Length: 531
Image 1 (cartoon, rainbow, N blue to C red):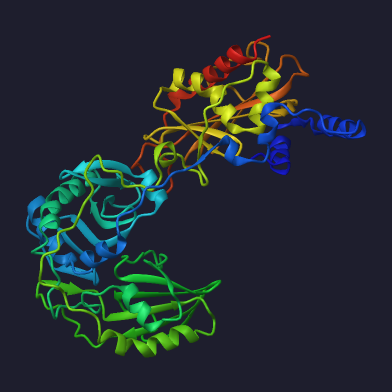
Image 2: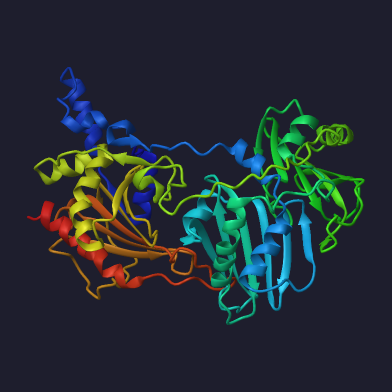
């Protein structure tokens, strides 16, 4: 809930005047009289986040273990060759394996890559554009689609769990449409994924983990670290597949990561210092050719162990144990293992309801409350319990931004969000401050200036050159220069999902909706604070 220290910082930035002295004096007088004043009904909610709303509900993910067993037996080069052949024509040149479960190739001027067991973070999924391709759920993220700073590119992520799946990447010349190309690749890959019989890694192929995975191997070489999670942090611009990489917590502040790669790291085999600790590189005895003559490899097959401890003792011991552990990795199961994909209407995120679209931690769904009758009580209730803030603003937000905007609480603020993620209307209200002088007045999107129905208003803009934009109206709840209580309405604009124009520029946002922010302010004042 609201903390006085946190609010005071925000108040100072906006030029608010704190009314805390009045509250302190009232408490002091009540103590002198022998007992506290009778609390108003909502005052018991102060400092109690459960009074404002229920914590976000989370649906269970699919089992990661069975999905990992399926993905780790998949040949990424076989998948790419079949999808490319069906979507854009025969592969011209070799398939290039960059890791046991990552493969790249080209067809004309179109370069593609597929990673099996790729990871997508919650933030990446929130920014990406959901689409239906081949009858399944996928996510698209464009990278410099006009090719101004680099070749035009587009990533497609096909989930098999909430955060794990397959990533297909297309890079093509400026003026092309890489997102259409990668969508066709997904459409052509889906039948092969659902069948699975033509994608199994061949026994004896260049697969250092066999039909195993990095977490299975890391458990064998670092048994003292029971906490493990798939994938590794990005290194040199590259994030490993969740099948080919794994990270373990050895002790607080001590992690070790294992990655199976086809690469020749600078310095070769041995122990090398890094910014965060050390790296142990262990070359593997497999030959430098893939068993499939149509597949080239980018370097020697090797295992890297990245240790955050400077002495590197854990990684050294793990490296010594690798030969024995590698001798026990399982061979591929010849039985076909079809991949279970998400249907278009099947949920593939943890949070349920509005919290799935609210980019905030510790999200809560507001409880249903009835607003008090008096303006000063509305402000006091909103200060104590953000559910009242949601009730205060909901009618106005729905009128001007649409009924699809659903409320979600984070701290002192009620966010109204929808699945587009392009607009977040954020509202706060309190009786503890009054509006001070506006030292840096800015022109409002409506072109108007001065008070709104007699209420003083400050307008600010921030993040105009960044990824998103924050347009904020801070309004005195009372009229005149001494009106106490403050209401804020922030309209946060984000680019359309899946848009990333590349380096050196910023994606467009829909500024045409900004006048609606002032209409929300006006409606709130007229409905609840008219004098």
